[in-house]
Image (cartoon, rainbow, N blue to C red; front, side, top):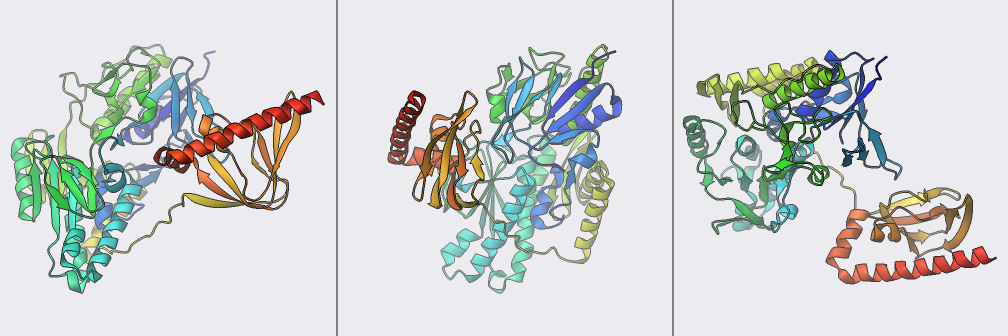
Amino acid sequence: MATKKRILVLGGGFGGVYAARELERILRPSEASISLINQENYWVYQPLLPEVISGLIGLTDVVSPIRQLCPRTELVMREVEKINLEQKFVTVSPGFRARQLEIPFDYLVIALGSISNFCGTPGMVEHVRSFRTVADAISLRNHLIHVLEEAEIEPDRDQRRKLLTFVVAGGGFSGVEVVAELSDFINKAKGNFPRLRAEEARFVLVHAGDRILPEMSEKIALFAQKLLAKRGIEIRLKDRLVGATSEKAQFKSGIEVPSKTIVSSVPSSIPPALHVLPCAKENSRLKVNANLELAGYEGVVWALGDCASIKTLSGKPTPPTAQHATREATTVARNIAAAIRNQPASPFTFEGLGKLGSLGHYSAVAEILGVRISGFPAWLLWRAIYLVKVPSLRQRARIALDWFFVLLFPPDFVQMRLIKERGIARQHFEPGEVVFLQGDLGDNVYVIESGECDVLRDADGKQTHIATLGPGDFFGEMALINDVSRNATIRARTTMNVLLVSKSDFDTLKCCVPAFGDAFRKLAKDRSEANQKAGNTAAAN
């Protein structure tokens, strides 16, 4: 009897979810188990995400629970940290307990997509908003409403002008759709602010190419360009965003645009776990063959979507669209089934049926099977096609109702304030409770506000008391400084309150304030020597 295989899918976007759905359809439960790793437990219908900005679609109506879409698939809601292709396992981030988890596989599907990458560009990380996720859409919508509220009460004209200037970088589908929805929302919402009704909002779209929408034909792209310009959207071509501050956007041409809102749909790169993967890459993406198998790991690992460099049979690179990702997922699923059943693999042959792009305000552009459509008919076609392609009937009904109600009532502009976790948090422990265990990953530095705790070390099956710490003492820094697991267990001796400094904040302070890092390294060294001395004394006794 054949051994049941384990298929591991990385990523919960179009590629990952549709691959899992197709695997469920064509494989019997006795043939293989399917697991999917994704940081969220939902799948996002990405083409409609820009409409969340303007409120045309509800915040949760563009998402579907992965467990409902893939009922036979085990969902692991963690982040992929490391992929071991030789030993066939994937390491994922810790959950509530600071321990990593290693998940083995027989067959691996890599569909982790791409991430925003602002590294090396001054001010971009701090002041530019990416637009890729539901969280990005909600955050941007909240920011826009906040900007309008501030502009309403701002007495200084120049400052008000800065608040009402919006910059979007990237003239592809995503950038064009974002600037169109952003323009519609601001112009509609500002009618609810008496002092802003007469104010002109400024919208700037900057693109490195010589025309926007490079994915479409020149005629359609120029139509879209003229339509956006007619609505008052400034389009700066052959230029790009190279820097930002809290007050302005900086372009390569030297032009600076005062603005409090800068959005970017570029640049992007593969996630860090794929950067370090020891395999062939092409154009900074994972290199695959015609069967979408990872080069060097044929028959075991497949890659698809934005993280893979894929070409059609005609030799053209596949664009990062949903229609290509879903067809790639089908090809991968069928080839995995073929590998399990010892059958020949089949190549990816899909060339594309067409392209659709929304321009907001009841207008769109489309190229379907060589036919070019623009304006209102293209908008109707865009909505009809995307609504039909929504996989969940429940989600489809909710989106249709959203669109219907917007025809009767204007979208709201309620700000949904999100509470962010502070860099320094507090925790309370009762006597006997364990703060962390020896061997756990280092994730925080702890400072004792009140109470006491014991430092305990396990060795050779025995637990030794190393020290007792009290108010003003700190612990947990050694694992973070040396990037190793915890070398001791901390247990509350009395009722104890502590301050937590996260690893990311601790690392930021070390990098930005060298004296801070030096002081902690010296303290950690002194503590290590004292602990070693105490351990030697205990062994001698």
